[in-house]
Image (cartoon, rainbow, N blue to C red; front, side, top):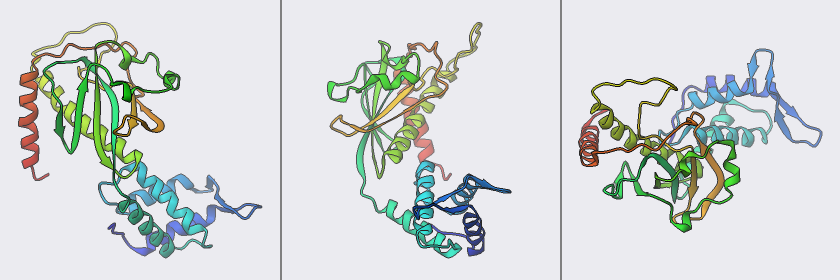
Length: 268
C-alpha cells in the first residue's frame, strides 16, 4: 500500500488543478495547459514525485495512475486534497490487484549468436537466445518500424533474444524485461571491457560496449502473438552499427555468476 505525506500539500495541488479546470459546453471537464504561474504537466510531476508509490510500479504507470485519479476526482466536482489523495490510493490499489500475465519481449543484441550461450533465468526473467526468431514470434507489419533506418536488428548474424516476465500491464512488462536485460548486458559488457588493455580509434564515434540493444523492441504473449501494436525503439541507435564477434563466453558467463552472487549478498 502506498503511503503519503501531509494533506496540506495535496490541498495545494488540488487548488491549482481547480484553477486550470475547464467545463466544456457538453458538460465534460478538461484542463488548460497553463495559467500564469502554473503548468498542468508540472502538477502531474509534483503528484508523481510527492505521492509515495510502491517501488515496483514503473514511472509510465505512475503517470497513468495520476491521470486516472485526477479524472475520477474531477467527476465529483471540486477537487480537494482529500479527494485527490483518496482517488490516488484507489487507482494504485487497483493496479496492484491486477492479475499478472506472462509476456515475452523480443529484441536483439549487436553480437553474433554464440552457440554455447544457452537459455537462462536471471533477475526473475527467463531468457532465450537464438540466431533467428521462431515463426510464431515473427514480427508483423514491419513498415511501422520505418521511423528507424536502417533496421539493424534484422541484419544477418545478430542475436535475437526473448525475455519472458510476469507483469500487470504492457508497460510494466516492457520495463521489467528491459531492466533485466540491461542488468545482464551490464555484467557481460563489464567482463568484455575489463579484458581490453587499451583502445585506439579514429573516424566516426563508436559505442564502447560491444553488446548493445537492437533498435526495435516488441511485446508478445507466450504463444508468439503480439500483445500490443505498440513498439519501443532506441533513439540513439547508431546507423553504422555492426554485429560484433564477442568471444570468451565461458569467462563471461563465469563473471556473470560471480557478479550476480555478489549483488545478491549486497545490502543495498
